[in-house]
Image 1 (tube, rainbow, N blue to C red):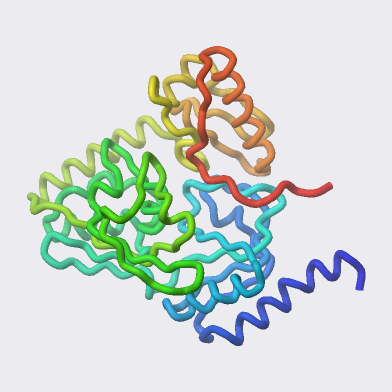
Image 2: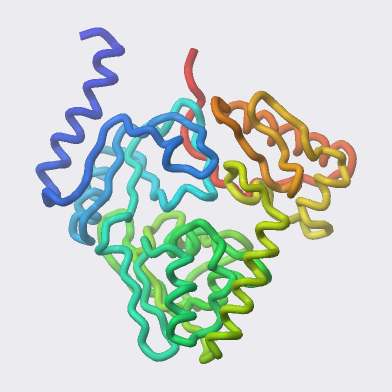
Length: 315
């Protein structure tokens, strides 16, 4: 067997072995294209793509990865993610099955699975007359992804409404943490770098449905007026302490700057949009153009908000 055949054979053996350790309802695919699973629409494949059917199956997947010293990554809706052109060597885990997508409303609390869509959370809260979740309506992500990056919009942030979080560690053991036990920062949750969010209890306040609907409508209009419709990963950079990243990029005259099929959005300077055929390498090159200009002209070191995974494509 030549080297290329051996490389292709390994994921096949691993997928067959993993299939024996989980239920038949768990989805396992080899060499899964990740570009179609991210909102930026770029990037290479994952060796293994897995959708566990239950928490025991997820635990089995994590133990399998640990036993094989295999890297893993949790994929939500791919809205804050840039996968490099060489793809991801390891297992990409997606909590897309119904077990992880439940939402139960009890009083002013929403008990949500990590796979629940943020838009669905916002709509359920509105339906039950609970306010505090309007900012989630237009974020194209899941509860798990929002917890991992403390996602925010329209002046609101995820952990402002979190009461507790259930997580699973790399050994497959589950724990529940009160929000005060979780390490959280701006667009970051350090605790979830080594754990997988299984779900959370979110707490709002009683509100009038008409007022909640009005705020959601206002936020939606503002979003459509200020953000591009073309494929993007959302905000590329975190806001520096002295100026909003989008405003800085606009002031630097970088709107419309292009590298291949990747360009800085004309609507919002902190968005990079892609067209058909764009590569992750082009997006990464454009990111570096922006960072170098900010460094040279303003002495500002821009830090990426979008999560970058995978490896470069070999020649």
